[in-house]
Image (cartoon, rainbow, N blue to C red):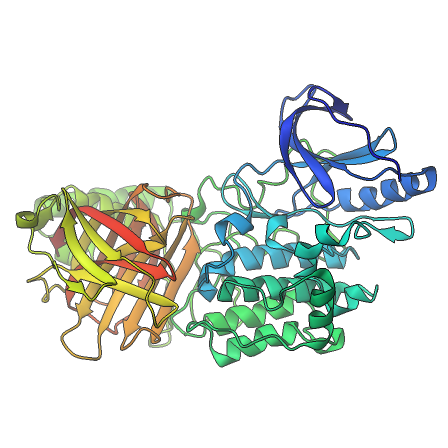
Length: 589
């Protein structure tokens, strides 16, 4: 093949012109482009191949098929064409990076941490498979992050003539070969091949490394003949490991019948707890206001005017966005929540304020059982409206707290200041209070360091708020209703991470006995290291309401622990973690 012509800034490809280089993939050079009229930006991929006339027609046919895909979690192919015998693709631009950057090699993750991203990728693959389109190159680099951290699947492979795009030099495709199904090496790709590749990605995220390593030839031999090593992650149960190994079966016929069946089983095993909340699509989710989960990739600049299409009988939007639903449902599909009538809300709020002035609000009105997402109790279930906890939070925050500390110096508050060996520390450093795992824990893949506020062991009904700033590592957050005097510790902890996710756990006993009560993503979280986020918990009897940066997130009902101490916590995943805490406020209710 002849060498493709050089690309210059300002050069035009279809309706777009080149602005600057973005990077280099194993098949294409990637540039930032701009539409000539609309001025919206896009990623332009110029393939490093030179096509003859027959192959140009084949390329156009393949690209036309992929351009018809319209799904919230598929990065759209906006335009395509051939310039001086060199094919090019114009894709939606994802300035937030990829899941390779979010989950780098060597960093093991919890199953529930990666679950939201996995579900979005799986939904995109199922949609494409129903349209009889294979991806063939599933890997973290091809899972892009949109403006609201939604995942968009990119780089569907195009076969040109009788030759796949994988006929490049072997060293260029070793990374892709890490995820290739055995049958792809035999030239027999099918829908189960994408399932296998997704399972390899999941394996890598859980372990920190892929199951197979080496040169292209070594990888091909291992994928076809070698069983994957056991998954080393204390949060992966034998049942969950079996799910992943089923999807990694050498014989495509022994895998799950579809990607959705695989991920449904994965989710059930990862969240094998009747207090766990299921991920379900509802456009009115309070934690997703302004995120654009369902529409971010469907820009008006799409080929065909941005009109969503789907294979017959399918719903391309269903089960994509993330929002709470009733726990305890057997099907995993909840009923959309009703909004309270505006007039009723205003009347209730007015009555609430009047009773507050009479000194009755906290015990008689504000914290009477709100409508919650909950397990089935006494044959009844209730739903939640976001406005009720939000009003409760606003009212409580207007009152003077019973405990208050800026945590700027040791004598400011009665907080733990101890170290446990070389790895864990609670301490004031300068004018800030730190919970630290100062080195990877030698024994466990996961470890935490909690720091308790003394003389708070009798807290039962309360609101607790503090600012957390993750300066290094993984996760930090609030600990509450903690009973740590015996060897059988019980406490709740509410974490955020630097990637925009939050979690609520119930801890009973040792580290392996965690129960996830909630894990999700939220656009209200400020992402990245050294970003300050305000976390708040309102706990009343068995009701727990969570807030981030003043926004209501979710309500949970659990009666395992109804009283105990408050504290802060740093959680690490095989790397040092340092979280700073400040502006602690507690209201006893």
